Length: 294
Image (cartoon, rainbow, N blue to C red; front, side):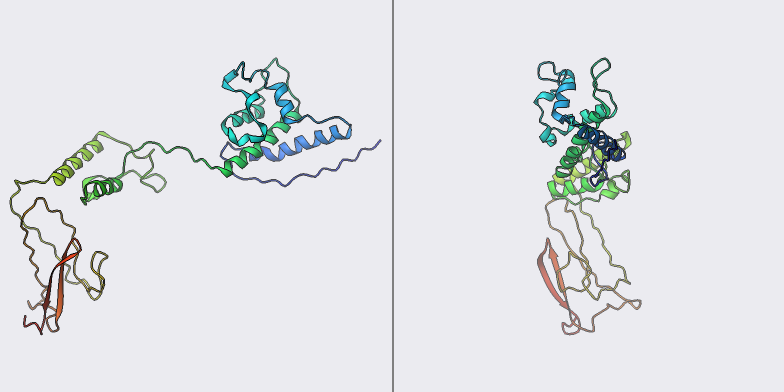
């Protein structure tokens, strides 16, 4: 007697999965389960369901009464694998490695092992794709950019994180990965020093003595257009300064116009307006140049 069997293999989707690397087993699993099942069907034998196999070989130990290894498969629904993927992933691992059922207990044949795994694995893959879970981020310290931003948001103080704190460790091109952001005694001391400076800036120092600071614009800077986002729209040239006022008081702002190599003030051939602003609010508007008589 000649028996002809036609196998129709379903299309295979091979990709990257979160629950371990199983793609290398997928083709073998389909071939392993389809060939024996086709012969069983041709011989007139019934094919056991995944639930029946699970009840026969697994539930005897992993049930609500015994709860072996904390696993109660009699209460878990095979049609809703995505509700408990971690537990079903353990089941797949034990089936793949033939670790369960344990030695001395009745074991399913190769086709039954394949039937269970090929039922569970696609369900687990679909559940992972529907609800991706990248895991919980590790607890880490702030890098110096995040530290400066936190001080700005909490206290309204702009600090230069690059001058206060050392360079952060970089992993895979990123400086905000928790595994790379270590805390050494020297680094901790730098953060404490920065915190003391920030605290003094936040509280203020009423005993500070008068002093002056100078900000210069490079002579060769082209100022034919707006030179920064902090300057008003329509402006040309100028400078925007972020300055911390250490205490309440009267502050004098002096502006010196740029001079050329012959000590002449540049740009006086035509009238120009000088716009002075603090916190975005205009405090003075002056006109300098030929028409102003200056």
